[in-house]
View (tube, rainbow, N blue to C red):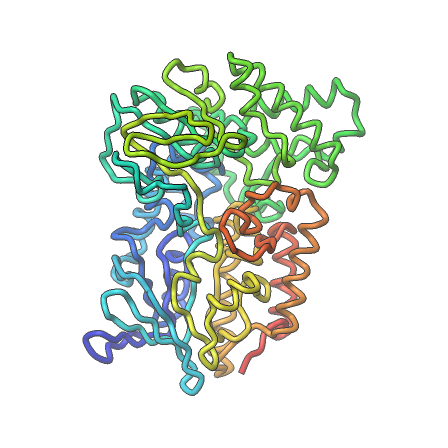
Length: 541
């Protein structure tokens, strides 16, 4: 059925999709094809989601390009030609623009439209979503394709407003920015910082890197795809996608079935070296028990720390770059190009603020607690995100009896049944977010898994004339406990106080492990079990 305009400011729909990144575009295509009146709203002026906003220098995905793409249309995957092993931000954005054009999705997307509030009406079983420009959308289903890393955390640097120079955030990086010849300071050395720092170092006159917590940084080893390589992959795409779906990470990795401590030191070091030279996330598959056995993880941590000593010329700088407070993998694994090598450049300076914190910014730079000062022209903030929940809590979402989602989640953390729905908020479904594998897997595989399940659910409800679906509260609490239990069986929760997997990077955020560490295979089994048992874990009415 077609969307109906009630008046000039209100649109009646079956489904409203919030977001037009990988998840939103596939939802729009799939549900439109299934005959639903569906529309997407997107705050950006273009499709792409995180790959529109995160366009900072050096931005690149850590999943191989041929896997970080849709599998639901054979002709699409045959016609699109990736250029590099790991795709740059611009290539991913070009791909998503192509998808939007090829499937004529733009006509059903309202760009530069930001949802500020959504209210559930239990009598009509419909949501009313309001936007910043005064429009309203009334829909039976509210599908949240808002991403896990889409809202930058608030800037909490002491006295940052005192800085009188140029301030840039990596999120929403201004297009056409030229920093050549400038003195630049980057705050943050997570995944974003590790990518932007080497890129800026080649351009600017002087680069000051402010580090609080060092990260384990794995070399990308990116390269152009070799002649004939893409053609061979395309010929094997059906089997390749199946291998991806059958790997816990949602992308096939040649994992070593051996445990690290079951082999001798020589084999262990040779395996680490081989994986290091290969680069990318395959490094994490060096042994089967790296995220389960502390001794195994200690061994790979020692290997990386030795690599830092080998690569970085200045022993004092090398020591500062070594992580010592958490297992490798407990924080988001960082994959970057020439990160450690960058600190050998004469125009790059490392400032560690763990022991000597920032006292305040000044009009010309910053001052540390011991009085040491650093001056620069441009401040670049790579300070991270209000992960998972930020996009939800910034909206005023009100469910049954006026229950506010931000109040529930700010007190207890995100609570969902199977990562899909939250009790008290009927017909609001979430895509690849808290309570699902999401960031611990290939996001595109996780997104397709969710979208297909949601599409089948909506068809099931339509055929049976069911009006609402909501998380069963007991099932929800059981799932939240299961997510925590699975995480606690690994080394993931052992990250130090800054891990955004637990929300610890945002002051006052509840401490709960948010992604599902069981992987897409076990998660898929839980989805299938629910669907096969009349959507167990949910209340349909």
